[in-house]
Image (cartoon, rainbow, N blue to C red; front, top):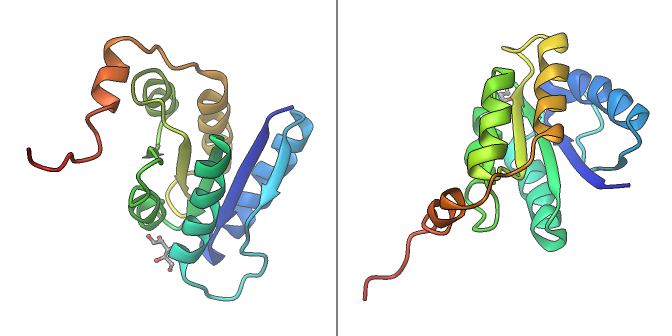
Length: 146
Ligand code: RB5
């Protein structure tokens, strides 16, 4: 079964535990990069730990903070990461089809649990379309001037 990486900060802890239960029921092999307590912490360190693993394994991951914004900012600093902050199922489907997003970011303070579960499932169940979308993805990282 696919290995899936997951991480959060203190604001995302409760939602992460809920998602983990659903992911385990789906049979994913989960790697939890923390945080593991409700104590206030700094989201970038969890984003970077998860993204390093996703890049190394060419895998997929889920990051959760209060808004999902800080996690997505940190994640997208990694050249091999295409992180998408999704607030609807349509965002999740389209970012998989068109952007081949490999990290889903969720905001636990702005997205309800049922919607977050639906977004997660849409993200996991949608394939990349390739073709012209791959050409565009190849242009995401800035190239040095020639
Ligand atoms: C933590 O209070 C909050 O700033 C963080 O979870 C996140 O929303 C940052 O983008």
